[in-house]
Image 1: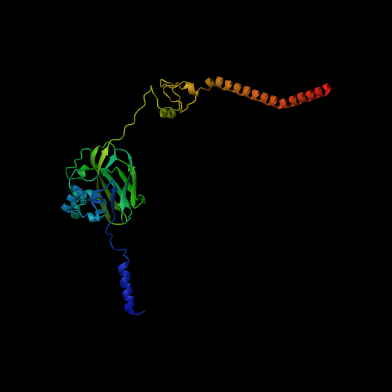
Image 2: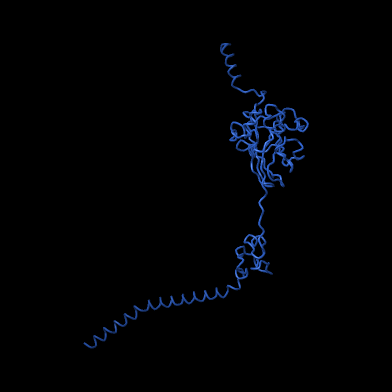
Length: 309
């Protein structure tokens, strides 16, 4: 093969095959609860909101919503990322994400509930996720500082599974929060020197209260769970089997669960069935005997006629 053709082929291969040493341009960001960068990015549905427009105007490269990363932090986040610049990771290209506003696109969550966070990945990496929540006196109208975050993360996961293009971070949401807050996510890679930073605005609602059934009217679930039958007044009976269906507050449990009260009914039913069987058998015997008696009567009648003639 001529040298020129070999050289041309080498150029084509070099142009089409990515080099392993070339740094990736993007990696990921939270999408549930949605982060500011993901919400305002080209694929987000909030790009036209006032907060996203203001962020872009102030300087937020939301076209690279998944690239808010800083190299060589090595866990020294509070030392390297200045107060008021946590959402941008201290990067001037994303400073619009640091705007203190109360109208950022937010996700509604239930305080203290279990939840699976989704961190969308455009390029997978191994690493550790740390999620922080703002303190109870957090003010969304003020720039976010490290003092606004709890000292310890409420969720820490290393190398969580990836499903449907996103890391799945299963855990429990912070308790004792109501109203607007912020979840701050730090993703420190172990396969690259990069650390990623994200701000997700959330609105916490209180956990739903569970109604306690009154003793005077116990619920079916209560009777089935306690394992002891209850009377119409709601008090446990001294003895007897527990039956979940016997929880109607208007009927004493003993009238449903006590088998002794049903023996007379069962005995009467058995007697009626026996009588019906006897009557049926008698009718069948009479039906079978009728033709034979009729034949004897005919024979006798014919014999009498012969004698008369």
